[in-house]
Image 1 (cartoon, rainbow, N blue to C red):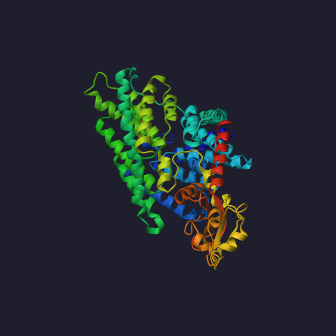
Image 2: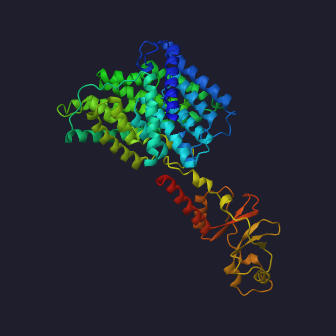
Image 3: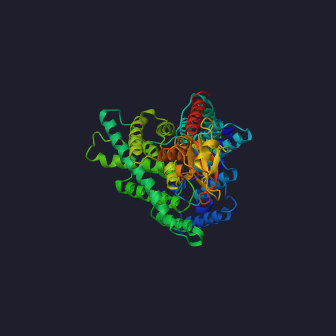
Length: 557
């Protein structure tokens, strides 16, 4: 069912995007925006600017209406929220992505495809009251169907779900993910015009020289993909400084800048499907390739940084293909006999650049195979993708999605499920029934009141009822008490406590720094009334049990 919905949704959104391009830019319905050189300069400049104004108006209108809803994408939802996606929030994101692409934004529709298809997977799971692990799997099925239908690549869609959305491959998850990907592909194949990417020339034969050059392409794409992600982050920081009209001016200015870039080359408009095929077959010069790469990177950074919705999925494929072609053109002079053919270099770089941005090497290799239909040209893609993945992981450590989460302050490093850790807070781990006493109570009285066989620690309260520290049973019964000696003199952790929302990771760090066996939980940092006690042994035991449970769900379904 999710695969069927995904195929229908991808076909519908793709058609709406083509209709929008045809109406706004006055081009034929079957033409690609990035490959059309007959658009008037007025439309080229004004349509993206108007699109920015429309997006700004939508953002302001829905700012309060979706307030409080978690506008997460499939990766974030699976990593932090157990696969739960907001229905209305996802529809809004998909609408913004469609409008961003329709008005010429240099963004791909893949983010919108994945968002709405994953949302329906999540919604079905919530209706069925599915378990957390099943919810995450249904979201992955939606993402697999979206990518499969978008590129007519069921293998790439399935591996995308495993690598980017689920973060793990299991035999139990293989059947539903593959079923969704194949179903979406079958549906989209009958509703949209899909064809293989035409690769120029003949494939370079596999040899030591060929492998060495694909390694070099992998290195180039690794640094280029890191530069692309940093450029988007820099663009966001620059546009964030514009606070006029509550930031509504940002997408308008971004649209104007995008229109200005499009006056130089229309390849910066839209995702770039048409531009990729034309540039692959037209034998462009090194100067044209270089300027196109720079303009496309700038356009994507400006679009995403200013507030246009979308992703870098297809932009990374286009940029990779151009980088590969540029390598082939430049190296043909000094290495005329052994230089890679443009087609082989382009496909290798396409897979490598996509791997650097998406952190999905298997997906990119499968995509290179499925969009070309030629196994021989994908040998270089395997090598280049592997090299690029290694370099980006070691030097940068993030994919584009997790990098943006990092900039927002999240600690996500991948799609693995870490949300359950957040659910284990001090509130859920504390014991609300605990022994307490006034800090002014005498030690002699406390020794008579609290038996060492029954009480491990006593939480102290000052005369106003606020937290004043902890006295352990060992300390209490190991001193020779005097009549005027109070519990206050034995108090520990007087300034060390936990707040109710503290996560289990924060709690474990607190135990390590304080070297305490138990810590008190207070209601507020400024009030400090003790409401519970958390012991280190209970925290470690609970964490171990939960970790074992998650592993069993993952590997022993």
